Image 1 (cartoon, rainbow, N blue to C red):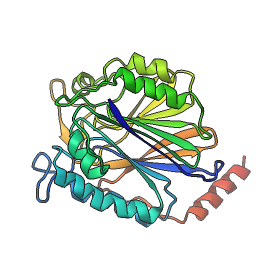
Image 2: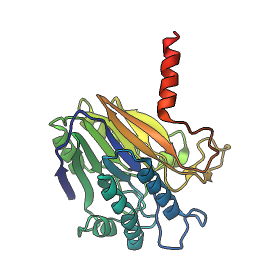
Image 3: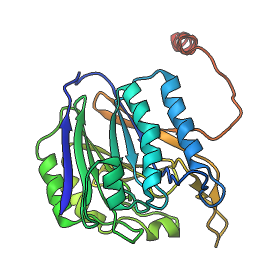
Length: 294
């Protein structure tokens, strides 16, 4: 059985659409650090400050799983207290998605104001400025790999039967693709071919995921897959043979619908030395001058 939400807004279907993906926040209660090192709440606040300070249009904020590190209700409360005021200020639609570290009952109660039992998946569909965002709960209670149930795939097929004005952005926590890294590959989505058969030939323009704590890309049935950078920490994608390592580092993703294209861009938030900071128009003028010299 699945509990699924519906919602839509009427907006300009020709203007660019920007969706922010936040993934793997791994929030804990106050004073608790992930792996005894990472203050994930501080990371989240820094990301939210970046969103508000940029002054850019944000149409939706998608949080694609592992929102809490251990499923604690207080972790979801802290997340909601931080994220919802920012979303309201930006006028952005919020989409919460389950991850393997999340707990369905607490997730439903604290983020969705909904009472559910542990066997109920949290799937949803919303439309923002003509872009349909479909979120699937790929979690299996008490396990870390992922699965989509037959009834979820049937529901997805029904949603995709009618194309959306700006296409569909599909969100799930577990990447439906192999990984060259043994750990993430062991914990990926089961039977991705079943999902491939449902989305093949539809208006799904991009699949966004989290889970692997790395930034990467793949494809399924000709549809690009984007693995967004985690907000908590990242794993070493080229560690020495026989080692599995984690590094401090975090960021988020902006997904832009530009014409008929969906473009995913990683935004780095790890402290780094700034190389330059120039007026955008000055740079554009310089590029235009260079183009005229051809």
